[in-house]
Each structure stands twice: as C-alpha cells, then as structure tokens.
Amino acid sequence: MLNTNEDEKKTMDGRDDNDNNGAAATKHVILFGISGDPPTGTGGHVGIAQQLVDHVRGLQKQQSQQQQQQQVVSYEIRILPVYRHTFAEKQQRLISYDDRLEMCRLAFENLNQQQQQQTQDPPHCAVVPIVVSNAEQESWRRANNNNSDDPSSSQLPPVAVGTAALMEYLLQTEGVDTQFSFCLGADSFLSLMEGKWNESPRVLELLRGQFIVVNRIYANDNENRGDNYEQQQQQQHNERQALRERVEAVPGAKLLPPNPTLGAVSSSQVRSWLQRGVVEDELRGRPDRISPSVLSYIQRRGLYGLPQK
Image (cartoon, rainbow, N blue to C red):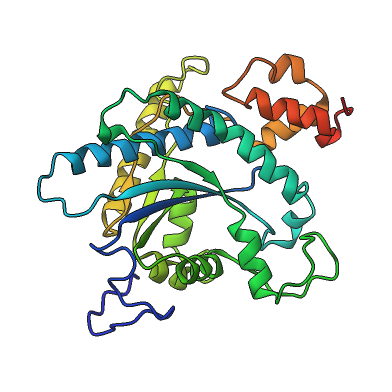
C-alpha cells in the first residue's frame, strides 16, 4: 500500500514529501519504459507516446484556464529503453543497447517534428518534448560502481537494477522541483499493485501513486468479428470497468481513455516478421507496426537476421 503517514517528513531517498510530486513542482516528467527491441509504430509505442502528448495538452489547457495558477509547469515525456533486464532469460535476447537507443530516437522524432510545425497553436498547446534517455544505463552504472558498459557481459556483478533503483537515481539527480509520473500498460499496473514486481512496495512509495495507465481496447476491430464478438466486447467492457475501479483506488493514478489507433502489434511480433524476412509483406508501408525510419535503420545495420544494406 502507498505510505500516507503524514508524520513521516522524509522519504527514504532523503527528500521532503513536498520536494517531489508536490504543489511546488515546475517540471513534470512522464516516464515511459520500453525494451525498444524494436520500438513499434503508431499502433504501439509511438501511438502511446502520441496519446501521452494529447493527455499533457489537455492538462496544459486546464492550467491556462485557471487564473490562480501561480507557476507554469513544463512537461516532458521521457522514453527509457531498458538497459539490462532483471530476468536473466531476457537479457541475452536484447540487441545492443546503442542500437535500441538509436531506434527509439528515430521512432519518436517524428512526433517532435510534428509538434514543432504547429507553431500557430495557442500557448496551452506548447510543444511537449519527447526525450529518449539513457537513465537506465546510468542508474545501472551507479549501482554497479561503473563496471562493464556491456549489459550482456558475463563478467557483470550480480546486481539487479529495477524500477526502484531507477527512480532513486532520478530523484537524486533531478531538481527538487521535478515531478514524475510513470506510464504503464494495464497488465503491468495490475502486476505492480499485486506485489509481483521486484521491490513493489518501494516502487509504490517512490512514485506515490503517480501512474498513467494505458489499456489497449480494440473496440473498432472489425477484422476479427466472429460468433463470439458480442461476448468478447462485453468481456472487454467488464475488464475495463474493473481496471478503472482499481486505478481510481490509487490516489494520483490516471487511466487514459480507449485509443482506437492502438492495435495488437508488439515488439516480439515485429521481430518475428523481420527474422522471417517478410518485410515487404508485413512491415513496408505499415507505420502502425514500425516507423519507416526505424525499418531503414534495421536494414542498414543488418539487425534481426536481415542482410545488411
């Protein structure tokens, strides 16, 4: 459970309770952690980032309408490619961290460019920068005393660095006027709340309920209508209602509305298409599955078993 003891003036990271996620915050950073192996397009990771931008713009509009607003809050969406999975079976499957960082930069740069072009928008629609960060790498180096930079090295010390360590690193390196939220998928959010994460209580304490939850609902999926379509729709409705109640029970958490642009595309599915060599059939001209610039980078580098061009 979240710690709500008002007598506890300091958190475990040494900050005062009002130093983070408090009224004095002038910068709000939404953290979005992904493997980036590879990042998916508008039907996946890029689409979620766009929804986060839309969410922030809604907040900006609300703030512009509140005359009592004392300070202007700047927003940032920070993409955090995982540096080294805490689960050993997943560590060896990741391609190099540098490649994943670059693919993430390529995947999300178009959203930044689109915002820059909208200079005619009013102030409440200011640019929401999407920044790809190597914070997971830096937090791992810190926890491991700056040892090997290769996350797949067999010489790595047995120190796991998870979300709690990452948040401790960010809280100690960012200014005290920075507020953090964490963007999670529905399954990840429920797993965290059920204590299935490493150091779940510590993660909850550090984030203090500041979660933005995304739930992929395929309400407009007409391709897969079958005999049980209505039953599936009712099941989705029931699951979303249960999720909404769970999110509402966490002070500070926010459930984003259904996004019809999000699909069932996943990084593992894209990897499978790449490894099977069906680029032209499944990926070319499908920005919902993978950004064209990311696909070009994969082909130039010869990643996922493709011949290098």
